[in-house]
Image 1 (cartoon, rainbow, N blue to C red):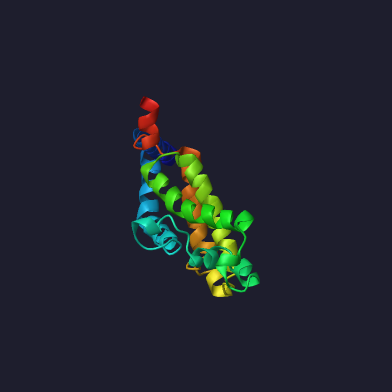
Image 2: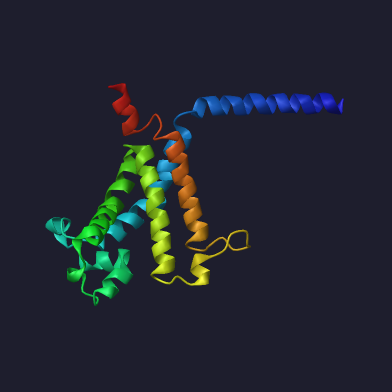
Length: 187
């Protein structure tokens, strides 16, 4: 009797969740990942990127000294804290790419345009951002955190692990049926 009841419960479970999976395949997980990215990280990254360029509309096309201090602090230090003295190649190119990637990649993810490549780029960005925070901005142990402890609020290991997981979902699944990628496939 108990075996029959358990088999019945298992069959019901399988039918319900197979139906849920079939109805949400290709859109719910992808759309949810992009929505959560927009809700949690879009404004964070756009504000951070805005601190690296000049003011106003035309300022967007000017990389500010702050970009060098944020992205390559030890390099700026080596040049006497004068960002104008930092060589364009390779350092200026790194700062340029980092600054505009911080604007472009989050927007592409939210739109669902080139989603897989954009999410992969953001994973690299988050990893580099974390290394810069640890190695050059000298993040303390509490900020770095530790996995498998009772605290879940460390800015680097805890939070950024969740960010990367969210981005891995987008690398694997893509933007989904409700994305610009999907619209472009229809054409």
